Length: 82
Image (cartoon, rainbow, N blue to C red; front, side, top):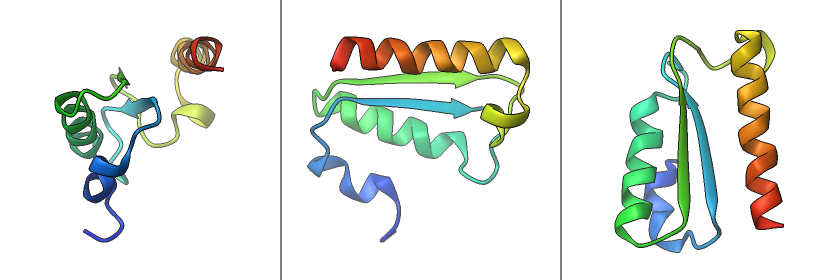
């Protein structure tokens, strides 16, 4: 638990974008969902974007449309928060 983000949720105050692939077995999507739900319950600003049929390597080997969509979410997030 020491290295799990869920351990530190109460200390997270910066707006957070979570981008996660449904077939990521290195970091299971349930972990991202737990952080998202916990932050929502605390009233923190958080957004969760999930990609079906993708794995941990989405940014390198994912479907082109998902790679573009991922980048659009990231750029949009920074446009809204910087």
